[in-house]
Amino acid sequence: MTEQQNSFGDVFAFWTKQWETAASRDGPFALAMQAFDPRRWLGMYGPATEQPFEALLGLPRFAFPALDRKVLAVAAGWLMLLQRNGEYGAKLLRVWSEAYAELFAELKDAAAKGEPVHAGRELIDRFIAVLNRKMQKVQRSEEFLASQRKLLEAFLSSRTHERELIELVANAWDLPTRTEIDDAHRSVHELKREVRALRRELDCLRGETAAEPSASMPAAGGADDAEPAARAAGG
Amino acid sequence: MMLPLRIDAAKSIAELADAQQKVAGALARLARLRDDEIEIGPTQKEEVRRIDKSTLFHYALPDRASGGRPVLILYALVGRYTVLDLEADRSLVRRLLNSGHDVYAVDWGLPTRADRFTGIDDYVNDYLDAYVREICRRHGGDAINLLGICQGGVLSLCYAALHSARIRNLITAVTPVDFHADQEDERVDRGFMNVWTRSMSGADIDRLVDVLGNVPGEFTGNLFSLMTPGRSMTKYNLDLIEAAADDAKLVNFLRMEKWLGDRPDQPGQFARQWLKELYQENKLVRGDFVLDGERVDLDRIRMPVLNILTDTDHIIPPPMSRALKQHVGSHDYTELVVKGGHIGIFIGPRSHQELATKITEWLAER
Image 1 (cartoon, each protein chain N blue to C red):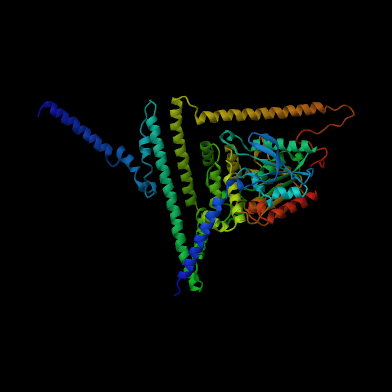
Image 2: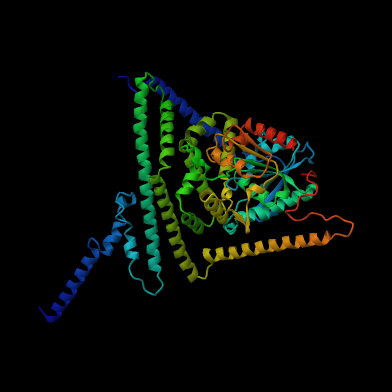
């Protein structure tokens, strides 16, 4: 074997080792691939295994425009949303299962009292009543509310990442962004408030000038906190 | 042991055939109808004034001259004011007109993202104040009668506290006052909105508003649906099929659907104040609610007050509304309990009539 062949072999062996590390159980590729595991979307992993993209997004960043990072954040947001949706769905499914069990128990009791269900519609109505009762109770539980909160947070987070990516692209094309439009709306709103306040002050001043009492005339009410002169009139 | 189900096969087949027939009939009826035939808000009205997205309307009946005592109706922002004039036979507006009142209503409109910074301060001190002054100007008086419903009731209370001289008589209906009073009589079938909002932190609400700008109508609609999960599940199958067995019932069903589908977004700043300062922090009864730098002091409400509520309100549990008595400064306080639900009291065939009659009688005495 020539010296060049030996050197090439060393370099190849080194790269193979690096790729193996990257793809190993805790390596970045394996972590990214974990995100596509449907079991994760359904919340079938414990709380210890949070979104694997977080591990990637936590890597040190460089100064150049981070389009790739924004794309990754959007993907991470979507997967987190899928996961939270799955967890929420699993909780709903549990309520349905428990409602079925409760319905069967109820039907058994009714039958024991000599009151079995005779019609399909009656069966549906009974199930809906049980499920309604069960849902109303469960959805007030801290566990269910926390699940809703997490789902909402995942949705808002995903929406934020999407906007950041879109705004990066919009900026590159000199297009107005949601953030800029919101800023403009805020300015318009504040200006409108100022105009209305000034108009009210002006009206007040005009009212005071018009009602400037001559020696024989009583003062006319005009300000908000003045008691109306004739309460009965029209009102 | 007796089996829990004693479903006769022949009867089941008949039941299934009947259900199939109903579905076919429902589809046929639905196919014959057109959206423009489902009319809501039929009573004639004219636009009096418009500020931003909101509009002040004045109602009139062709066979009745206006000129009675003006009543301004403020509905909530979570739904459109048209529910008060759903159809000619179920219209609180029309009942009040027929009783001799001169009826005005504010349409808060359909806020867009451009309105995200509009807060309760703007609704009370700008829009509402301008409309009250406009009505006073048209009628030559200094004060009007104000009827506030649900969120509109809270706006009315704030207005009456801050501009008391402009309100002759105040009527609130299904209005939340003490936002934590649901805990006095906690029941699983009511007050879910209170529980849900309190389960969030102030930072959660801020994030919701910061990201979405406004709180979408669909979002609020979904929260309302969660309050009656069974009903929400059967609405578009069992209930619709039942309703579609009769033309009039089907049109009523669709009218409600049209109204529900017209649910506006809540302006971001309004929702932030509503959910954080009122639902979470209960500032209205704590006396810490501040609009445009001025504290809303309910004790300054000294005009006659009629507080209407229902014992079967699943959205605003009755203790939330009842609390008003302890906080207003008025010595002329009347509580009226009407039968029906949060919306039902305004559209129920009998309840809306009863409501209009009681309001008219109460106002006549003052």
